[in-house]
Amino acid sequence: MTTAIDEITVHQPRARATLSAALEAGPSHAYLFRGPRGAGKRAAARAFAAEILATGAEDPEDARRRALLDPSPHPDLVWLAPSGAQHLVEAVRERVIRAASYRPFEGDRRVFVLESAEAMRDESQNALLKTLEEPPGFAHLILLSSEPEALLETISSRCQPIDFAALPIEAVEEALSGGGPAAEGAAAGDGEEVATAARLAAGDLELARFLLSDAGRRLRVAALELAPPSGGAPWRRLLKAAEEVGAEAEAAARAALEEEKEAGVKRSAREISDEAKRAGRRRRTETLDLGLALCASWFRDLAAVITGAEQVVFNRDRLAQLRARAEGLDPAAARRAAELVQDTRRRLELNVSEELALEALHFRLEREVE
Image 1 (spheres, rainbow, N blue to C red):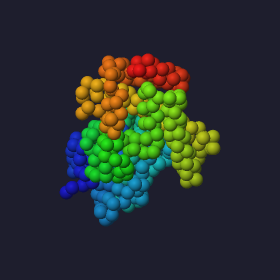
Image 2: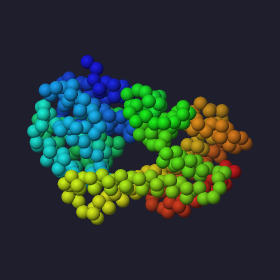
Image 3: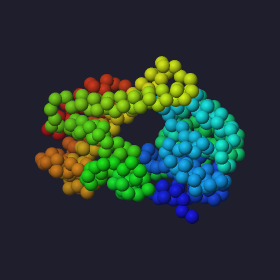
Image 4: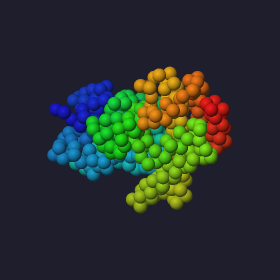
């Protein structure tokens, strides 16, 4: 019988085979879905949870249908995502550790999914350890992580690993265009822009969708303006684009935390403010790094065009601009420019002044490629 897992994991044959075998033999008490962002771990976890909850349900089809909804109304599916930069200790204790001891509201099983498990503090992970070691027979835990090395070894070793690989570019492009199993939330954009987003995202469907959003488009424009010739202070426009994304993340985190407080989670106004600000800063830093990665991709593409390798260009929707800019340019200069951008990305990890580093980068790029 074809299940939702078969459809969702069509581009993840190893994960599909392991999860299908687990359903046939009887699912284990804990799993760690690990792999790069945007590889489909979240969708696969929801499909796997739906199949687990359908087993033993009075109406399997209805149980499966409700579990597949996002957000799900199924009372035995608990889905925990970090409200801010980290999972709150209280949320992990209340919604997973304590809740795992309660018998199912319906059917035979309960499923607990912890999204971005690496965002759990050590205190949360240590508290979760006992549940992983001695789980009730009806409880199944699924941890999702794009950075499994950030998890304690005691946590990882008690979960069955399910490995996910980056999606093929063709699969990302198909999903962005509204087809295929990952098509939920298909993004708007013409054919060349969609193809560009798929290549720049390197298999990360979530990142590709962001690049096709208004915020993603503004970031990309600002990032490419760092490449000469450009007027004014392009580094400030890049910083502003990153700040806008960070501000949106902070507002979203604040709203989620306030909602949890209204639902009964004890949290002070100061705690809400601090956690929301951390989420915003984290998102801003990630976005700034993405902007520099996009700038480096431009110089990489310039070198490809100069050497006659247009088939490997990422920025396909700007091929005409690349051709015009490549005239008379030394490919070695384009490669050195890309390395200058990558070097700035590394320097920003050392907490140097962002504005000074980006300004210095812009002037170095001018000397290199003009």
